[in-house]
Image (cartoon, rainbow, N blue to C red; front, top):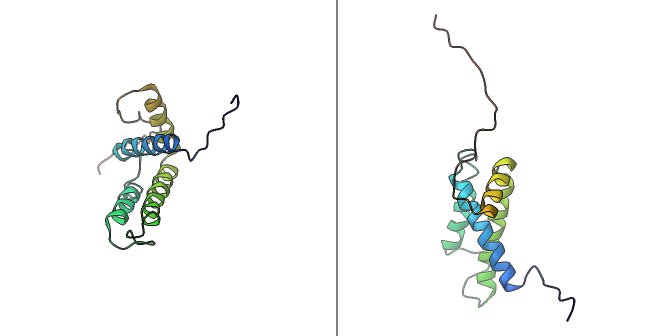
Length: 118
């Protein structure tokens, strides 16, 4: 068994992927650089899971739960893609290094104005 191939959909790999997406989402929800409207998407997915209305009813043994899992994964992936790239990269690197949450430092975009009262 020299060349054992592991699938992306193997259970340990799938759980690690979900856990990392959830961790990244929690960090990005706290990030001030992420627009408020974008932060609504994970909550809409949670609302869908809690709601009794589903694409596939939950009383079907496996399909009902897979439907909810699919919506959650799509929402988390969509949320990550809608977030500013700099914020996603900053927090992924912070998670890889094991750093605690800190907001992303300002990007250096400054609008310099002078206020004059007339």
